[in-house]
Amino acid sequence: MQQILIGENEAGQRMDKFLMKFMPLAPASFFYKMLRKKNITLNGKKAEGKEKLASGDKISFYLADETISSFQKQQCRVKEYEEAYTQLKGIEVVYEDEYIVILNKPEGILSQKADKGDLSLNEWMIGYLLSCGSLSVEQLSTYKPSVCNRLDRNTEGLVIGAKSLAGSQEMNRLISQRQIRKFYRMLVKGRVEKEETLEGFLVKEEKNNTVHLVKDGEGQKGSFIKTRYYPVAYYPDRTLVEAELITGRSHQIRIHMAGTDHPLLGDYKYGDRKWNDGYKRRYGICSQLLYACRLEFPEMKTPFEKLDRKVIEIPYPVQFQELL
Image (cartoon, rainbow, N blue to C red; front, top):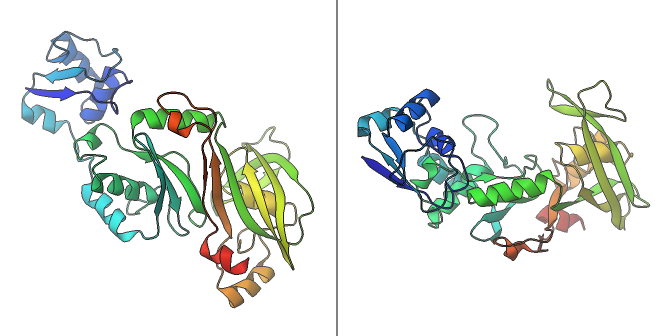
């Protein structure tokens, strides 16, 4: 017999969903049969699987260890997480509590895997939590921490990661409802004279991983986007601009600014190649100068009161500092 004591990371979900994570290779029919025969019980009593788990609940498995292990797969790729934590350099923990961790992602690092062999910020975060004892290998079998928002590989800045199930649910709710305000800074071509709010629809072209902007999404598979931006400081051939990402879509800021004739410095996909080449020769700039500089949280209640109206801000990256 095996027993599992439900903790905060497992609480709040249906029992059958938990069982499917614990033994992912077993069919759903197996669980319902074992529940019906009381080979799997909740707090010593017969269960249907629809029950919502609470912290402190105890699930008992009256099954052979071989049966349980045959339905499990190696989900805890500890070596991969340790490798990411060791090899990926320059990642900084900006804020941490019992529910979330906020990281400063450098340029050149993926937020999440694109291919099987990738090491990303997500793996680094799990490696970090394992190394400092905030997470155990055993806990990874039923809950795997994950980043809640993503940045392009070559965009630096703030990424929210969920350490717990409760943190994941709350951060994803706030992001989907656009309650966490996200701000970016960038260097763009020319002189931006005033604040503007841009709207449109993004249509993705899978073949070359680009997007194009259309004003009306009717009849097209376009995603609505909205960006507010305003000038911060002026330089001879460029402007330092801050933008608030009201919606969050891949390449949104880059395509919106290019559409205003103020493309991002270093953006070879949507920008001005000749202008970029000059900065590449003089300063070695090879990708867009864009970073997620600030997060502003709304009013937060227990148990997330530490984030109540909290503002998280990071300084300019090195290349920005050199040019400013």
